[in-house]
Amino acid sequence: MSRNAFITGAGAGIGREIAARLGRAGWRVTIADMSPATAESAAAEVKAQGGSAQAVPCDVLDSAQQAAALDQHLKAYGSLEAVCLNAGIFESGPFLDLNNTAWQKTLDLDFTAVLEGTRLAAAAMEKSSSKGTIMLMASAGAFYPAPFCPVYCAAKAGLVTFVRSAAEPLSEKNIRLLGLCPGLISTALGKAIPAVDDFMAGRSMQWLTAKRAAEAAQMLIEGDLEPGALMMLHQTGEIFEVLEQEPSLRLIQRAPSPAEVEDSMVQDAENSQHTLPEAAGSSADQACHGKDASSCDSDAACGSCQRSNGIVSCMTQEELAYTSCLPLQAPSDCHKASTAQSCTSAHCEWCESAAVGSSCYTEAEAKRLPSAIFSCHSSVVSS
Ligand SMILES: NC(=O)c1ccc[n+]([C@@H]2O[C@H](COP(=O)([O-])OP(=O)(O)OC[C@H]3O[C@@H](n4cnc5c(N)ncnc54)[C@H](O)[C@@H]3O)[C@@H](O)[C@H]2O)c1
Image (cartoon, rainbow, N blue to C red; front, side, top):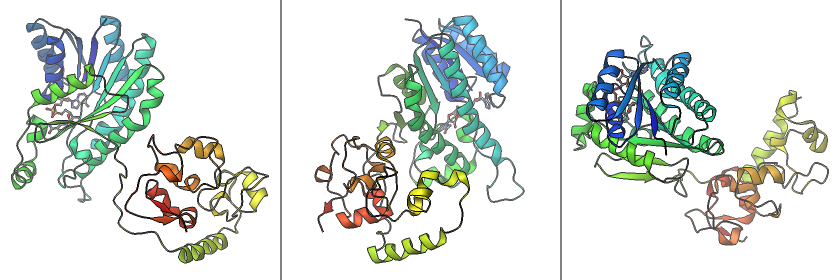
């Protein structure tokens, strides 16, 4: 089987170590980096260790350059079994300083360019009939707040959600989209910000090495984790798969009482008497209830528009089934019809089989409370 990899930002730091490691494992590697000199020296290192590599100058902020670099890869190696979208920067300057305009570049490079790289890599894989993995370089900062780089953390959190969300459409093209979330690594990027040292010292944290990050990357690329999986290289050096826990939300405030919700519903209905623009509510909604879908207060399933009990979501059965685990035949009056948006458990079919959670709603409450959406697996007690 061909093993050809394309790695951005592979001239230095973690990307360089990934290239070296994959090169030793028999992968042929394209080293794409905005710095031609470091790209050349990284390629020379791979070759010196018996591997095969080419250096391609490429600034990933420029979509045309990313596309051209991928083309150059296919010209040299013919297929693309692994893509590591690794190039990234830390943010510079304090975010709250209104004179600081550099923060936008963090989003452009650490988020937008990676999404664009995913699109371009997927197209290149499709064009060359390749099957393989696209690995996005996120960060543990996506999960653990780091006050010295809030924009960086937000960009990386965006990548995490993107991996989880885009994995399915990509897997239909035989592409496995994965994310790697390393802790702090002692590269030029990691060491660039003095605040990091204080942050780490205060938490008795130890630097991780780029070698360890590359080891995790190889494990992810060559392993068999499912599309959408996230791997974390924890600051302890341990490697974890990040699971989507249930419930993944910590309850901060219970939902309002049914009476309060009733009042709010009335208020919403009063506030919804204006004419909505076409896009905000379908003509069926308007004709059926005389209101837009979000304020539909009909307790009964509506025969004419096929809408289910609409207090919370006013969705069709098809819509509900799409956004939840409910089978299509789920009864429209089951409380899950309004609460299953966050349900991903294989065991959850009906209320009775829901796991017992920390917050309880009566069936009547579950039917009425928008906040019940977040308590999909909470126990539901009969009223
Ligand atoms: N170092 C850490 O603590 C750490 C932790 C978690 C995640 N990461 C992520 O790992 C990735 C690599 O980080 P690193 O520590 O190796 O950084 P680094 O600065 O050591 O190396 C980054 C490489 O990317 C290249 N690069 C920068 N901008 C580019 C651009 N616009 N186009 C193409 N190449 C570009 C640089 O020339 C350099 O060779 C980044 O996405 C970073 O966010 C780093």
